[in-house]
Amino acid sequence: MTTATSTTTNTNVNPTLPKIWVPGDWNAFFGFGTNILGNLMVLTTLLRFVIKMPDSIVFGRILPATGLMLCMSTMYYAWLAYRLAKKTGRTDVCALPSGISVPHMFVVTFVIMLPIAIKTGDPIQGWEAGLTWVFIQSFVLMGGGFIAPFIRKVTPRAALLGTLAGVSITFISMRPAAQMFTTPIIGVVCFAIILASWFGGVKYRGVPAGLEGSRWPYFRHGMFWHRMDDVFHGHINDGGGDERATRSDRQGARAVRMARGDPGAHRRIRGCDG
Image (cartoon, rainbow, N blue to C red; front, side):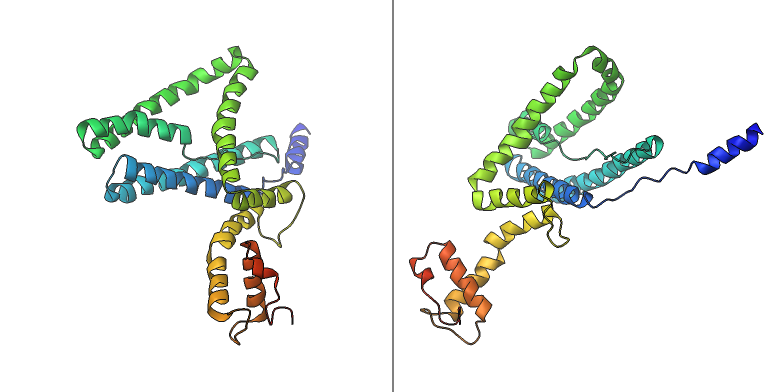
């Protein structure tokens, strides 16, 4: 009887498997992707123009290895999150994002690699010194994995989170905020698009908010403006119309003139409002 009861209980308990992908992950995907892309661009700039690394090393070894590391570490963290969600039955487990540490990237570049590269005159030796530091750091991190539980027990939570919050506010929040307000037409509009989706529930016809926000800089400084310039200067002359310029092209050209503060933009362009 006991065995039968136990078997029935185990048969009825069928926990739902964790969802690997949910709609909100699209925002995280594009947000995380653009962040990693920006970090890789900064890393490439530091290696090529600060350390003076040859392109064969940067594009032939460093960047491919970085891409492989990002892929493997992200998949490993995703597996850990899936295992934890399956074990606990929780639906709010999220994988820890894996990426390049921006503060650490600058420290290794300017404190370790650059001085050795300048002293020896060989950027390859600076790169080798950076690899040596990373190798040593790996043992420090592994040792910290055993010490960390004890430190968490004896250290107040506020002290641990205060340091993390300070670094986050300084490097992750304030610096991008300053860049955002430096170019407000791009930064503030992208920020508003994302906030409207996250907190206002605005939907962009199935397009993730992160992707929709990233489209605005292209719209603002990309082919849209070149297209409008071509339409205005090539097909519309002195308010006149060419048969090749469509009605929407002329309306767009008029919007360009108004956005750029052209005082003549408010005058009706023949064919725009007809």
